[in-house]
Image (cartoon, rainbow, N blue to C red; front, top):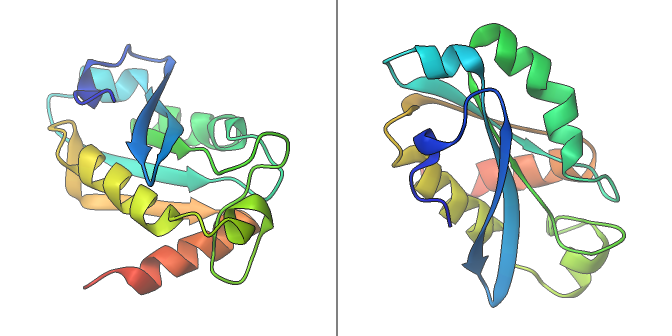
Length: 145
């Protein structure tokens, strides 16, 4: 696991992984060039892909947005080789059928990211498309706020 996310190269994506629930879980971290120029913590956008979509969906979809705003981007990868999915409790694929702890994975990933000094604690945003949208709602429902 890359524990110092702010050490990632500016303007490029960096793949990493962490171990959770007996699985190696991967994610991509992206620091916009503007974020690298700032000496202040920056907002973080976490993007969850749809069922069957590659995790690169989040990078290609939101890279321009975070570049423009100078934000940070975190794109986790669901479970499954050919058709990656999230266990959003009512949907989908391998993640659901194997009872994968995606809530725990995302919480662990958010905990790791929020501990990084480059991440603004009061500005962590979560979004998703299709199965990723269901997972976003499931995660928000699991928060103790």
